[in-house]
Length: 251
Length: 335
Ligand SMILES: [Zn+2]
Image 1 (cartoon, helix red, strand yellow):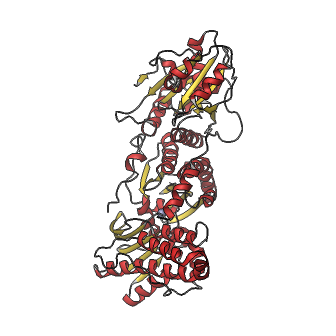
Image 2 (cartoon, protein in one colour; image 1 turned 90 degrees about the horizontal axis):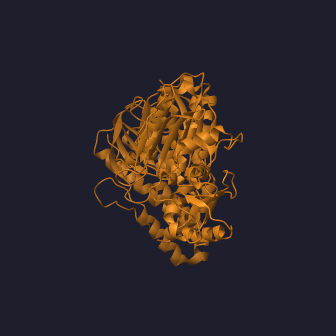
Image 3 (cartoon, chains in turn orange, purple; image 1 turned 120 degrees about the vertical axis):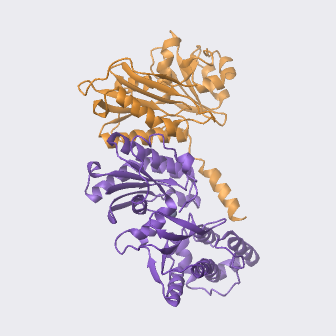
């Protein structure tokens, strides 16, 4: 489940600044260093042998490699990070890493919606169809966003049940091409409403960090002056904890 | 050595800058969202830590009057604690350290509480016996040097402070209820109700507070809402006497087993006047030096983490890039 592509070009100095982008919103740990559209380093690690994400162990190691491939930290001008929606824990590892790198190197941190990155990746296979990016939100739900054939966002990121999502798609009156862990997971529901979904093993289903870099440099990132923030879309399970706590108090 | 330390094991986002035993900044950003839920909600805590980690680092550096260029090592709490909360601190610490090629110093939170004693002013030199009672832990440790501690006893269920908070809530005092419970207890009779001083007949030095809490739950049930309202102060006083009684009984027993000259009292519950007085009386009686950790170093803070870091192994760059809080978060404390 893992692949690493080493840089093909030679690292250069700070005169041609590069961007490091990464995403940990899904079970993958995706990292890329790019300079003006040229990919200098890219990796995409899946799950460990025990079946857990490698975010905590592999992210900084991969970022370090990416920085080296780009010619060292002096050659990096910005950090780009996938802000979800996705795994809460994964997002926090990614965002706290990004913010701390920004502080340590005094460089800007740009947030990119993870669904946007999937949507951009879909451009390679969608042709003239609209693009549906879907991430498995666990607990039987999906995070999704819809884009035009040109990549413009039609739906803001949302969380819904597979049937709710299928209904939304059914109301479109056209058949989008879908990708992402949620498209694979809820293939039957979505396909029944005409969503075309490539084979499970197609790389289009996984977040590639080159798209995080590209979206961050093309200005399609979270450009507000405040710190980058995760897109959670769901409140914390505080209510559940509250109930549990109350029952414990009477134990 | 100038150390920047980050502590996010529970609900406070803490960052400190410490130079040797001298504290240059000890910044704590407390989360208030949890009061609504009557306890710390892990997901809420983790979200706040993410929002606060970098701003609190910046605030601590500013308060210390230094920049990251002056910092020689990054220390971070790696456990025990809430794993989602710890992860934010560990990810932040690693990512500040790596581009600067600074060493990373993983610190055990409990050793942090012990190491609060090594800070200015009035640092305490080992050997000493250390009692740490807080909302997260109850620890009786033998401190023979500055590198670690031997766990002589710890709680088998609830932490002491956790029991105070739960009983406070039972008496309608809100969360966190320790200080309110102490105020209420001052008006009551500590002998009004006979409550079990748990574990007093068992050998060993471990603590247990859940039986005491349960005894109080039954007592409240028998009294009924009106009865509880009427006897709140007596209930609070009786509970506090039993809880403090257990802590002091174990401390006394531990003192008997060794040749100690000094006792250190720390953790959030050390703010409780009744506990301080009881421990002070015991130390007077036995001719021991008592070190009461300063209040701002009793509750969770990062200065104590920096203090422990001075005597902990430093991981050089790049050895910590793949460092995982998940793997070490619950590691036992080794002396
Ligand atoms: Zn603590």
